[in-house]
Length: 311
Image (tube, rainbow, N blue to C red; front, side, top):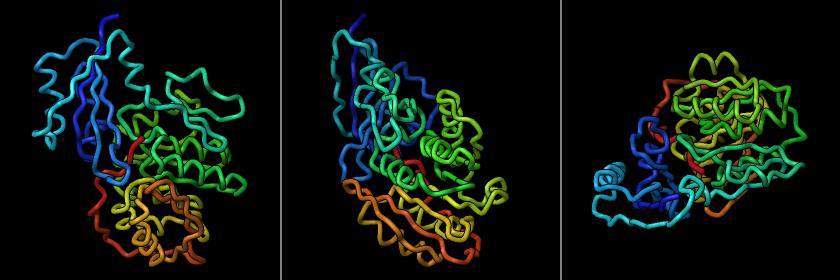
């Protein structure tokens, strides 16, 4: 096997999302984006793995993916005789949360017998479970296992992981996964087939006002692992599709953003029940009011960019 190589550049969250969401990249290698600094949601890193020393035009193509790093020096590392695809996945160690075990193909042999395993490769969509927001949502859902839900929606489903977890916990429930990004819905469908998950309805939608979503409302469990800005602007939409007394799980927000998100949902008749803080990130569980919230549109779509968060 020939030597492998890695190129590294800083990037922004928006650039990371664009790279992971694109199905049209022509670079002959594996691209991985990682959150670089825990307390800086905008600071990311791009690692590009190659099975041979990249030519100058390849280096230029990688640099073109991250315009924000135009003035940064690109780090070029020779990895030696190694499986470059496996190495690109090496940082994604298996994750065990409650009843769930999330892993990549590199760790397929480590699956415990007493866990529901999900094989989720790092790919074109966010949500392998390793980011605090996704693992916190898994833990929050696991803690609700004794509850009963019949109609579940996962908004900003990414790789589909949280929708899969809900389908496992409540096998009799109708489960829908939605995302603004068509690529994420394609990835979720692929992951569902790979993991033997059946019956999840998938919808490409900007917000919750798509006909396919509205006709299924009200939902007794709403999951939205997106970002603080979209959560605030979408609070009336999310509340309007929630049933009386519904459980709403929100993530993708920093602890410093919690008050603003909670206030937006309190204005829609929801109340905070629990917080799972993980580092600088918080996962919220809210309770919908005793009366259905009736939203008044049109809604401001500002802040919806970048729904799915990451790993």
